[in-house]
Amino acid sequence: MNHGKQETKKDDLEKKIEECEKLKNEYLAGWQRARADFVNYKKEEDLSIKATASFMITGIIREILSILDSFEIIEGKIPKNLKDDINVKGILQIKNQILNLLKKERVEVIAVKKGDDFNPSLHEAIEEVVDEDMESGKIIEEVRKGYVRENRIIVPARVKITK
Image (cartoon, rainbow, N blue to C red; front, side):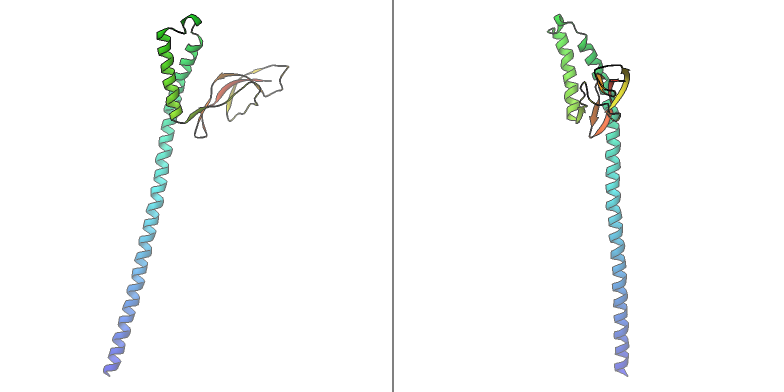
């Protein structure tokens, strides 16, 4: 009879060990899922933060580009006899600092030249002009430079195109 009790105790202990193993595996799986969920959350949060920062930087860059446009307009109106004036050179140095800042932020000018095809994803047509020498939909003139950053259009190039 003693032998029977020992077998029962042994069976009970084996069942308890099995239950503990099962419980341990459930807890482990739960912890692993929670960790994976946290890692995924962290990745999503990082992407969200980067997207928000990029959006904010793009807005600031748009404002800077507006200022740069003003510098370029002024530069185009400087008489030749004043090009070497120290004050004019100082103003143009500020323009160059802005250009260097934009370069550092990976802002690039959209390349546009006369005769290029009009691309509505890169260009904004502000005027259509009749030109017998060019086929329709070609760029005649760039009126304002366009800019991209990280393959996203910040400001489209404003152009005149042929009818």
